[in-house]
Length: 420
Ligand SMILES: Cc1ncc(COP(=O)(O)O)c(C=O)c1O
Image (cartoon, rainbow, N blue to C red; front, side, top):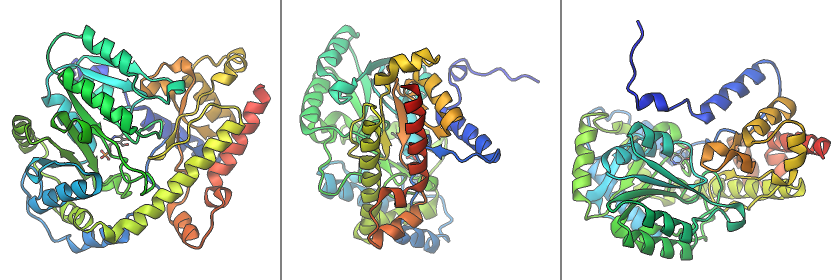
């Protein structure tokens, strides 16, 4: 029997990330060596203190409060206050099964159209479509460091009807690896305050920047209108634990109540052992700090090395400051690519995978025009345990630490040379 699907759901296709994973798996099954720069999961083991805490808490079998374990919410509020200077009370911290689900709930519950500065993560737009929310995109440009152009944003806001609007900002950013500057946080905060914009500041890649680099956010410049999301998935390498966080401003009490109701009617609460384990991390960050920082150093080393390699190949590339992504541009090869039938990033990524066995995701999936010829590179195709051990022994050569990526870059360079 055919099942009729809700019309909002039929607008959403399978995520590009999952599709490329399947192609890579097929090629690998055929015995081909593929450099997989398409999928962004931390390659490192979970910090030992977190894993041990999860084992020790396995006996926690009861449902926890819908909004999250009270001690965990206290610890999270304290962690964000000490580390980043944020003023979100524990009473307004919400725990969910990954920040992705919390982002979806926020889109579902908050009124108003969504503004998405690009390039941005692949899931925001489909989530908004599922909620039947109008989406306005604002693609940022390579020569402006992919920053939100304040003038263009102000024009867009002025052209929109009065009333509440939403905007998702993501720093450090997937796909660019770039972080918001202090000046940007100040300017954007002021503009959003003037125009009744509720900002969702997706900070899932916080703690993947070098420890001495400050994090700038609208949570500092516009705290009354900014909701922060984060969790265990990236810096703590525990995506599969599925623990995400939302920090709501104190004034958004109606939203907090609505989230609690929605959670109580959907997933009920996040797994109890995982919440207790997360408490050990947020309540005692020094127990995992060294591990997290070593992972960060390796991410930064991979990002810097790849930037240099891409630039040497003649591509446009900014040096990432956080996360584990790069967003190189192939525009300098535009004519050579077009002469071989590649006029957009989708065609380029398909051919690069087939002909050089290097998997990347086309820029068009990230809310910038596909014919700008950008591709999203996840610099995590390496064995995280081996790399960490080698790093602590003092190994610093990227080619030794990241052999699959080194081989992939060689193949890609040779492929580009043949084009020129
Ligand atoms: C920018 C961004 N935000 C949010 C998420 C969701 O993370 P999680 O649901 O694991 O917390 C991801 C995961 O890839 C991401 O890249």
